[in-house]
Length: 202
Length: 210
Image (tube, rainbow over all chains, first blue to last red; front, side, top):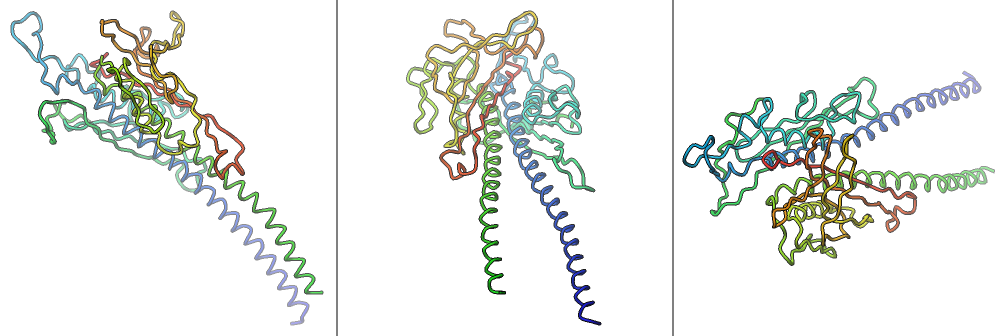
């Protein structure tokens, strides 16, 4: 092998290395860009969804009729004599719309609006309400009689999806809140007597 | 000959570094600035939403007694005497939530408690809220809240005609605006923009209050 041919082969190898490096580095930079953009979007949305869940739970807790918590009584309906328990908004049939209790409607409404859950995938400006189906993303609210529990899921479109991987990721947030009731006896425990007659369907 | 060439390479490397480092620093400054802006905007959204919702944790028709002040932030004391207690609750939630990056914010001061206001529809023209008598005018947040006077007169809140049309629904709205200024931070070296952040939130009254 002559000196000249050895030099030529070395030059070719350098050229080959350069091309491989350029391709590899391009792939690396692209992956890094995807990772940073997607992680940033998910970070922002996870915080937003968590806040929405907290707000939804608080809104649901605020919607619990305090007359129930105080065992309020009033005049009986239809002029009947005596004192009767007042109709409670949360459990009265006339105040329910569909399968939702009042606290669920308030919880879902607030969480969907705050979490910016779109009613249609094509138009993100129109947001879901409590009347819309809460799938594939939306809010689920329940209560054990002491707390209101909100769980919100939101399908997030990744800004730069990596080829071969999903273009969307579902982020979730959960929040708890308790209705406020003042009593004349200090208590630290909740009996867990639900203002809903049965666990709400999911 | 070889020594002179190496010295030339070194000089070129120094020159390239001197050119690239400011560009990199500029990019890093702006990345950080965008991150701060997103964080503050999220915090502002949360604070206004919580403020609007907090109104419903106050007794329905309560008014603050004389001498009541809020909101516990050093250098900020707002007199809420005679104003709806829900308004003070809203302000306290807002000030309590806005805790980070506040030194970078220049607030657009507003009237703390307002009433009235109408989103409007075909039959009803839109209307602007009016300030409660005695409401502080240097607050960071403004909330439109209805109430009932001691004599029983009803002061309406904001009527959102998009809800329960055409009559609308009396809701609570809170708004806040601030500009994010990086001038007093090291980021000022590479950040030349001052974004204005705005947040508005609306809370529906619980069904038993409607």
